[in-house]
Every structure is written in C-alpha cells, then in structure tokens.
Figure (cartoon, rainbow, N blue to C red):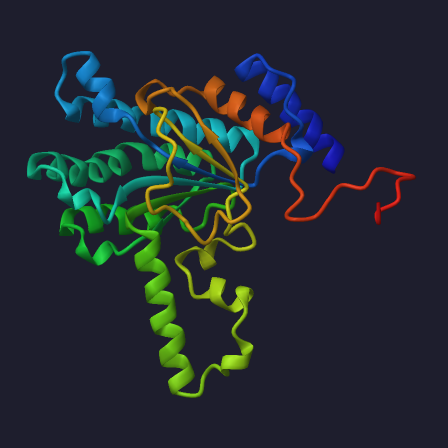
Length: 269
C-alpha cells in the first residue's frame, strides 16, 4: 500500500509542481504557517492594506489544496492573533468578515478535497457572524477524513499555556489529577492542539515576508519543529514556494536532541 501511495504522490507532485524531488516518506505531517506580509504587499502596490488580506485569502485556498494533494495531514494557519485586536478598527472588522466570505465560498471545495476544518483560539470573543461561519464550516466538514485545515483564530500561545496551567491546577485541586502524574504528555493534552493528535506538534513551521520571529505562535508545540523563514509575502506565496520549503525541510537532519549513528560507527565516540 505504501509503495502505491508513494508512487501516486510522486506523480501527483511532478504533474502539479514540476518537481519529483520530494520524498513522500519525509513529508511533514503537520505544517504550520505564519501568514505574514499582507499589508506590506498591498502598500508596495499603493493599495489599502485590506487588499493584501483579500489576496491572502485567495492564497489560503490555493495552498490548502496544494498541501492536501501533497499528503500533508494537518495545515495550521495563523489567521488572527490575540494581539491583532490592536490594529485599526476598520482592518480588524475586515479581518472578521474574511472567514464569512472564505467559508461560504470554499467549504464545497474543502469537502471535495476531503478536508476537515478545525479551529484553535478563543472564538467566543469573535463577532457572532464570524463564530457562525466558523461553526458552520466545522459542522459541514466534520465527516471529512483527509487533511485537517486548522485555523488559529484569536489565538495566542501564552494565553493557551496559562489556560492549560489553570485547568490543570483546578483538576489537581479537585483530585482529578495527581501532581505526580504531570508530564509533557499530560500537559500537551490540556492544550488546544490536543484534538489534532497524533499530529498536534508541527514538523515544519513556515513564516513568510522575511520576518524571523514566532509572534506568540505554538510556543510549546514547536519545541522540535524545523523553522523556515522566506522573504516571499503571503499574497505571493504559491504551491511551488510550499514545495521549496518542504524540500528545505527534507534536507534537515532531525535528531530531536540525539545523534545519528551511521552503520558500523561506535555510538559512544
């Protein structure tokens, strides 16, 4: 079965992206993307910032399809952070309208590609129209068995971690959890990404636009993620860029704190 899947994926990749260099066995199962550069993309074209967000939404559709076709299991997109409320009211309002437009148009395509929608973040603070669009998309795609399209909406990693600690403390106080039981696995189960297991932690994190910071995104989960920073603005990001970033990932030596011992080599050297 694996060899058939591998051959199909290689052919699919070559046909769509003109590349047969990707190794299916090294495909990242979970890719997380900080979609940055929408505003600067628009400003360089003497357009309002919202024009960049509109084009960025088009790219979300394109990259979602590409990631699904490449065999990615989870695609997490940083759509709106807890800090983004500081932006001008007009821009925030536009960003809150985007999920409504996106899901109303794109859900049939998601279902066609067998993609299930998931959301992490405090959606209770989003406008009702945004909450309704998100909840409808989750409900409409709940039976899809392919890739998970995971949006981080009103998400902040520090808020997530503090919330997990508070809940664990409550469970300890009520006797539900013994403090001696608290380890990395238990802590991870209290995070918003627990529903994505066994692929809760990204293998690859990509940030577009040339910025090289994490911006309060999945701080616990990316402990051993490979990071790729690209100068491409998100509205210009295309499937070939995704392939290039995956190729960069596949060339990394992922040791998770250990070492790679070659055959015949003394591991104690």
